[in-house]
Image (cartoon, rainbow, N blue to C red):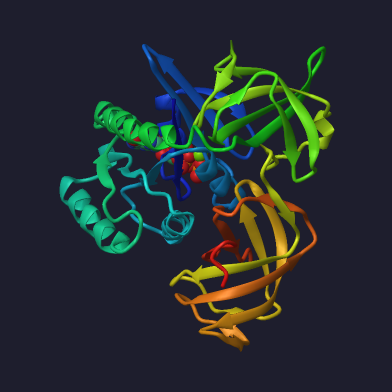
Length: 348
Ligand SMILES: Nc1nc2c(ncn2[C@@H]2O[C@H](COP(=O)(O)OP(=O)(O)OP(=O)(O)O)[C@@H](O)[C@H]2O)c(=O)[nH]1
Ligand SMILES: [Mg+2]
């Protein structure tokens, strides 16, 4: 199964594109579209609630492996810029720049726009992404785009297969109660393989649970491997005790405070002691305060944009994570909201 996020600024043609790639399913601050035909299975996530909120953007990018960044003929704006910073900070490696609404653009203008995008994305994770020109009105480029998604999907599948033997982790994005069944969650197996009847733990609440049954695209299955989009019926927990972002895993650390080895974006303002930021770990988020900054071994009052530093952060909400998790810091009050990424394990 190939999981695709569709992101971009307002009116960039995201929803039109999503609706041409799949059938509309679940709607929240992200909208899911599904496609399944002759062995090809796609899950498409439209980050509907972005740019108003950045949560849907982070959610869509965390649930998927391939990104379609939509840029309309009107060109790049502040939010396109923010999406590029977000992709870079989240380290999204697989993606395609989709130049939408091509029926409304002149060839020469598109050629200019292509060059401009290359220039702006130089030195970012998007540097080597393919560019494609599409229209959902004339269908220009649509078949080619599907082929590109399929071939990128094959690369992603090879990468995911290498994660099958790790300890299982399922990130939950939706929870509901089904009469007669109980707590049902939807999520993505980020690593490892899960089996029906597995006894495992709901984190960060540290509740022992059992996976009663597993469904993939509404079909009962016995196991699900890394990369799978799953629906799980759970035993020993109620839906009201589960939230988006919770992780089913036996190997999590849970804390409210963090010391992160951070890299600040070049496109953010400096970070100062006392600043209130928002921390994301997967789909979990929590407000945190910057308590201490160490740069080049010295305790400092602020860290410059583009620099590396060790940030000590305090919060009040439990977050479940493992050593390899990439934390994201955002400042909801800034125009370009993505501030930094950081890891716990590299702290000296
Ligand atoms: N001519 C033309 N119009 C398009 C195309 N794709 C989208 N549109 C139109 O552009 C407008 C925005 O498209 P959407 O798909 O809603 O874009 P969006 O990014 O989801 O927009 P918001 O979610 O409202 O920010 C709509 O009026 C669409 O009908 C296209 O390929 N060609
Ligand atoms: Mg939309």
